[in-house]
Amino acid sequence: MSGIIGVYSVDGNNIFEELSYGLIALQHRGDRGFGFCVDNQDSDPKNWFLHESGKGLVFYDMVQNNPEKIKELSERKPTVGIGHTLYEKTGGLQPRGTWNIKGYDMMVAMDGVLLGYPARDEVVMRAIVSKSLSEADDFFKAGELIMEEFDGRGPYNVVVNIRDYRDGEYYLIAFRDPKGIKPLCIGSRENKYIIASESKIFQNIDADFVRDVEPGEMIVISKKGMKDRVLVRQDHAHCAFEWVYFASPVSDIEGKNVYLVRKKLGEFLAKRYPDVDTDQVICSPDSGRGVATGFQQALTRRRLQDIIENSRGMKNKKEIIKYLESDLQDAFVPFEEAVEKNPTAPRTFQIEEPILREIASRTKFYFNEHVLKGKKSGAGDDSIVRGSVFKYGMAPKAKRLGAKTFGAIISCPPLSHACVKDPGGKTFAALGLRGSAEEIGKKVAKDLGLDFVLYPTEEDLDKAIGLTDTCKACFNGKYPVKKEFIPEDQLG
Picture 1 (tube, one colour):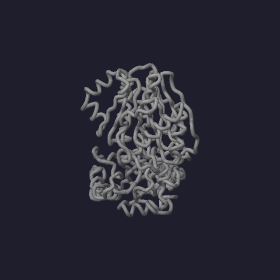
Picture 2 (cartoon, rainbow, N blue to C red):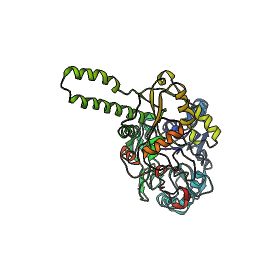
Picture 3 (cartoon, rainbow, N blue to C red):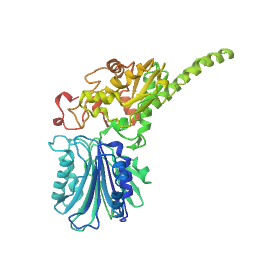
Picture 4 (cartoon, one colour):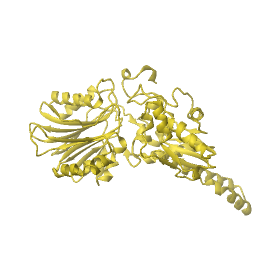
């Protein structure tokens, strides 16, 4: 997962505002660093693009700490640009320098992982894009060559800045892998086109959402406008984990709002586990808030409905009033903001060294003792990967601070396989466990020191998203890539 953006002004107007504000909005998709490039209209042919990158956050590293550079770039009034926020350890800061190939200068940024190559992903992508452009006589034919080369090798979304030697024109090209594993969408503002990983960014720049980029589609934007073509059609495999964790809750992916999907998962969990004993629902900020809210609201509704049904058979008014007075006060399940997240905490599942991961897990979250003490609490969270945060950080703290019970309300099925982007990778809390979601939840809870773990099923996830053609490889081991790139012990 990373974030990418491309902006093009058909009228030749300044796009720097859209590019910079959009890049900041994508920082949640990658906080290891960022990079961007824009056209340099006043330069000689040896320097047609201006390029900047940093290892920090976009706002602090560029906007706050380097305002003169921002001012200089904006005053050049660029008309086309691409940007990238870095997440994957398999990649580096992008885009990286201008590539000069036959007939073109170009810069490339990608979100994704390419399996089966010894070099870094973005280096491979640049090489294949260059090779394909050299061999083809137009961009769409080059796109077909690119997709043929990467067939079955994993997810990729790409934006490319190009200047054509022949006419001196700038182009913005974008394409999405034929399975559409990662999200990519199109927006517009004042005759400017914006290609981005998520629809969230359009709020920052007063742009309108146009549509999702189709799987296997290439977009070519120039002064003549936008041309689009689906080059390869395959079975879709949208990453279900985008709705669970990666994407912003305000974004829409394939027409499905991320927050509402997470909330729906919480509702399904309340129905699946009607007898869960909890006084209050809390959450792990921030991706656990949706499932916690859905669970809390659905559990409250169910308890109220039970009271209504039980009271229907009562004929004596005094009996009904007495019953309501005693039971209504316990029907409402409160949602409490009992957890504070350390704003500097890293993503613990990315830390391979066990000791460092335990340290990070212990310092990631802090509880409000006054909210937790003496209560039976269920904590909403997006997933349990290795389980380190619950095992070393949350469960022992909760018990030490006086929680009666403390359990986990999880918005995705048990993670039992490594991601498609790293099929030979991490171990998981649910690795090798078999049985129903309920049975696996009991085993994981015991191992992590929790009183309960509530998992949804794959069917619940499909219903919440509203799609059945999602990639759920991390839950079932059915990878949407060629088998030759998957270790044998990972095959489902």
